[in-house]
Each structure stands twice: as C-alpha cells, then as structure tokens.
Image (cartoon, rainbow over all chains, first blue to last red; front, side, top):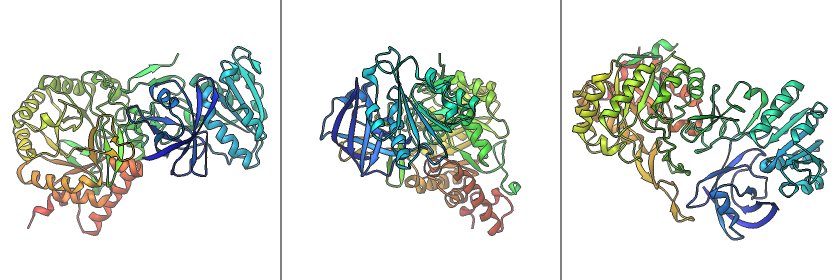
Length: 259
Length: 303
C-alpha cells in the first residue's frame, strides 16, 4: 500500500471530482484498477482516468461513504493506494475505435482514448449521461482530437436519449468498441457488437474485496471468471453465457437478479 | 503420469496430494469448476459455510506484509442452504470437502448433515478461524468442546469428518481428543492471528484490525505442528500453511502430511501454481526413487 498525496482537485461535473495524486505505483494500463483506502472507511476499487509521471488521476462520483469522504478532501490530503490490478483494455487492435462511456464509467474510457490518440488511432468518444451537468470529459476528448458524440436522457445537451440507441446504427463503421458504464448499457452494447461482429471490450463491475484473485467475491459463474484478475475488462465473447447482465453477487456471495 | 501422485485421505481418493485450501475461490461453482478443470488439484475444500449468510467484513480485508498475507474476510458466505445449488453445479470428478464454521456443536452437526445430503464427499470443521469471534480459535483450543463438536457431527455423518486446527499451545492435545471423538483426518494449520499498521495512515489496515497471517511466514510453524501431530495421531493429516512451491509441499509430507493444501500461493502466482507444485512433487518422487506419495509421508520421523 502506498500513500498518495492529493496535489490537485478538479470539479468535473455534478457530484464528480477528479483527484490528482502523487503516488509511486507501477504503470496503470487504461482499464486496470487500483484499490483506494481512506482510513476508517471501506477500501474501494477505482479505475484511474489518467496515470502519467507518477501522477494518478482518480475521477470519483460521490455515491457511497468512501467516495463522499474523498469528496471532502483537498490538496495535501492522503489516499492509500494498492495496485494496479487486473487486465485493462487492449489498445493494440487494428482499426477504428468507438469508446462508449455511461456516466462516471467515463474514467477508464478517457484514459484509453488518450492512449489511443497518442498511438495515432482514430477514435470516437461517445458519452451518455442523465443530464448535461453530469457529462464528463467532453472538452478533454475534443482537445485530444477525438470525434465526440453526446447524449443526455433529458436532452439538455447533445442528442436526447440513451447512448445505446444512438450508437446502435453506427457500430458497424468501427472495428473496436470499448465501453464502461452501467451494466444494462454494457449488456446492450455487448449484444450489439456480437450481432454486428465488432470486437468489443467491456469494463465491468462486481464486488471487489481482495483484488488479488483469492476471495472470490467478484466471480462470474459459470465460467468462474474473476473480475479483479481476469478483468475488469473482458471481451464480449468471454462474457457470453455468464452471470454478466443477469445476476449480481452480493457481498455474501448470494446472487440477485439484475432487473 | 498421474498414477504416481494418486493418494487418499481417509476414504477419499485423490488424483494428486495437492488440495485447494478453504477460503480461496471456494464459494462459487464457476471458480471451483475452473480450478478443477485448469489444474491437477486433488480435492477442493470449499469456503466455510455458516448457518446464516454472512457478508464478511468491510474492506480492507487483505494486506500484504513481509513474507506473508494478512486477511480478514470474515467468513463471507451465502449460508449453508446454498450448498445444494453449489454441489449440484460443481464437477464431481474429484472430492469436494465442505468447510463448516459455527459456534455450537448442534449447529455444526446440522450443517454437516445438510452438506452430506447435498452431496459433499467430506466435511471440514473449521475450528480455527483467527478473526471471527466464537467461530474459531476459542473453540478450537478447548479439547473437551472440540471432542463434543466432533462427536456430534460424527453421530449424523456417514462421510469423513476432517477437523481443521490452528496454531495454539494445545493443538496436539486437541487433535488427540478429536481423533478419539471419531475425526477422520486433521487439517493443520489455519492462518495465525496477526495485524498490520500502515505507518503513514497510523492506523490498522484491516477493517477488523486483526486478521489471519498466511504465506511463507507461517510455513515453518505448519511443519512443526504437522511433525508433532504425526507422532501422536493415527488418522491422516492434511498439511496447510505457506506452501508456495513443491519443496514446501514435500517438507510438510515428510513431516507427516498425507496431502497438502494451497492458498496464499494463488494470490501471488495464480492458479497455475497448483500444477507447478504437483509437477514438482512428481519429479521429486521420481528423482528420489519413490513409487508413490505415501512413501514419503512422515519419512522425516523414520530412522
């Protein structure tokens, strides 16, 4: 575990802030995650939105006790980091990329976008949010030369509707789709890509407790895939026939059906 | 190739003497099947099941320390009623040993009966969890209480009953009592109660403060305890504790373990470590001129 000092705090969107930490950890591949601990609170997995020159950017939505606590922190404060863990996005595949972000799932997506652009690849950033104040990294995506597509559910910015409805007619123009966001969105994208025969990598979420591939809390039946070790980024084909999109395991290991 | 490695513990036939220890990847059928398919594991010990579902402790539940790993998962499990579904979906190519944790002899027996009905090949009584009050060490250090638990479970079981003991001054005495009460095997040792403090946070890392230490740090302790147990019990011993490679495994077998189980090594090297250990044991047996696993069990005691 390494101490990360907050050197900058950025208000990104409503209830979403980025924290730039100076921390000495191994290089994070876009899509990998780190475990973030604030003493006295739960340790949580977060997928960084950038990692360069020993500066780690964590983009945090205030949704739980730990993330709300992080939101109260300012420059000079400390977060404790272990990792990086897991498998990130494969950004070495040929062709055009469509990157789809739902809400704060944009964090690993913007990092992947940046690396793709640095490799000189053509990439579109498609972001969907409930409303314009929740949109993330739109100007950053534009500034790194990506084509940007915006949807909001209330129509306050960009196209009104769900991102999945907008991209469904265009995915065939791409060779690769990368996505991170709510499971329902990812499940739709997975099926779209499988139908259209477009290579698809999804960053998915489960209860990650140990991050080391031993406790089993993030396992996906029936294949026994471990989100913390084999993922959190999976190819669509790997997720076929698994609990992904159907069941979610509670901390005890008992399963609930995703509506 | 595998014939050399075939072994048995009580009446359980195993393709190799390398087991998956309780607590690692043993609560979802998918991960259990994956371990069975991807490795030459000899038997699976499930995560400990309790009467009620348990969420386990809040994170952090693990911390790396020098020469080991600390964990306080807190016996997270979906409750024993899930055993039927679990056992229906796991591959039955190798023995599945259901680990049970409880704080009362009656409840141990109740869960053991259910596990047998659900199809378990054996049960392992977790009498040594170092980080859940009333579910472990306190129980496992009391020879009379352990005797009562084992008798109770034996009275309702037709499958082998393994007793998992942890490090304590009374471990030999407790093991003898468990054997007398009818235990079919002793599993030793569990993790050892320990803690870690982050010097910058100036706070204990684990949410539960205390956890169980595993990994290389505890291996010599496991060797000592298995060695001592072998001298006094007739029933087979499964050696557990910091087995990171085949040498550690062989060492425990020479001390008296009929089989060994692996846990922390998987955190460090992944599932492939199981096959590395299996293959290492095989080469050792061949190179040292042994015909079967049982030839080396307890060999360090012989003149």
